[in-house]
Image (tube, rainbow, N blue to C red; front, side, top):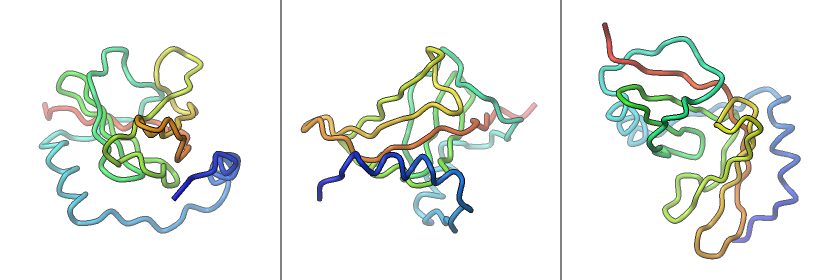
Length: 131
């Protein structure tokens, strides 16, 4: 199935609508719990730190970023279509030189170069080792 980039403005407007009911699958919940371990949530932050070392897409709404022992949880307002599909990359358009709330990301198939989903970052929730 081909995704048409013309849908991008509709995705951006989705943030203005009431959030849809979203439920993570049991397998995805298990994967997220494993990635977060016994870390505890802290106050949300606007931007990821510069030393972010990688990420894991759990599903089409959830990505976990790693920076040292801290994990940063990003949950998009709406689906970021195919972000969790093997062979796809998230290309981020940032105004600040690092990934921040409000930045736009596009899912790109690394083989064909076709653009899929478009999503907008929200604040990140850091999960830190318990004190």
